[in-house]
Image 1 (tube, rainbow, N blue to C red):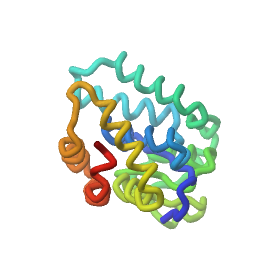
Image 2: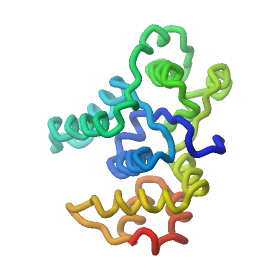
Image 3: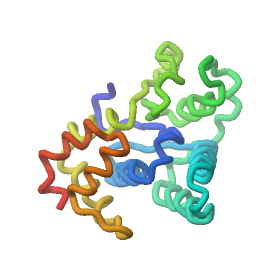
Image 4: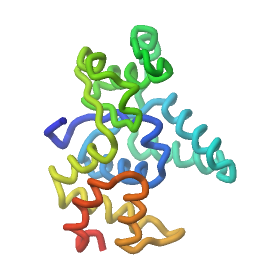
Length: 194
């Protein structure tokens, strides 16, 4: 586990897939709690996955979200990692080699992913990388700087207009998206989220 709050995290496509988690990750990066990184390949993966599972959504709107992410955090996009992809050995899912290659070029400390088994620890150790599930990553940030974290969460909650969320509705939504530990920690600070 990374013990400092200003580390650099590469966000896998399966993390950016969820708008709730994507919003939180963006707000926390904008609050300088960590440095977010991603790649064009990751953007392509999450947009295609959303369109496959939610065909009623508009590609234009998803691409607008992608572009807003890139404009909001101009240093987040990692380029020039393609030459490393063939060097990365991942048996479980070779299609995830681009994630490790981009994390290396982006000088990341951790890969935040739901596909934990796709990134063997011994392989990541060779590149001084760690992996964390989104819930662990976010709950660690909450523990490090609760005030800043809660302010970012409040911003994400208040930004939801269609539909708007009460604090309890928002926390329930985050729980449904797998942020069980993070939400348990946030409950003690619920007054800061209102």
